[in-house]
Length: 108
Image (cartoon, rainbow, N blue to C red; front, top):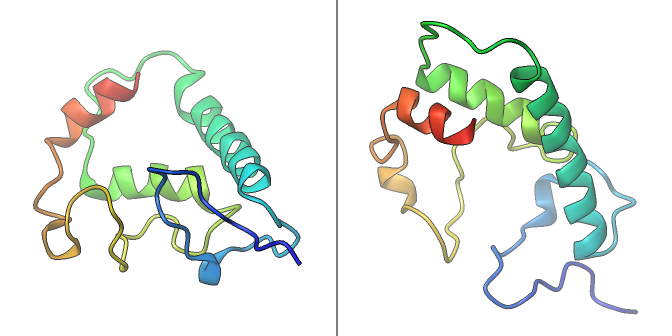
């Protein structure tokens, strides 16, 4: 049987223990599901008129993250608990966030 979730070189390692879609068998199928989920969240947050004076907090960013990935992953909206080969080490995760307003504007 072919090993599922063989990740391409330089891709984030995948831990499928919190995958909510048991029928997903390949990295490409997973990527497609994540893309659709992120698109739906983008439509929710960015299809309306621009937010004026929106206070973006850590809570809000985690909510957006949850909306982006909850259909696919159990960890959606939470800080990563496992180390990967990219990003900030877990113990520094909350401290490493840029000012939320700058982070949100970068997404627009």
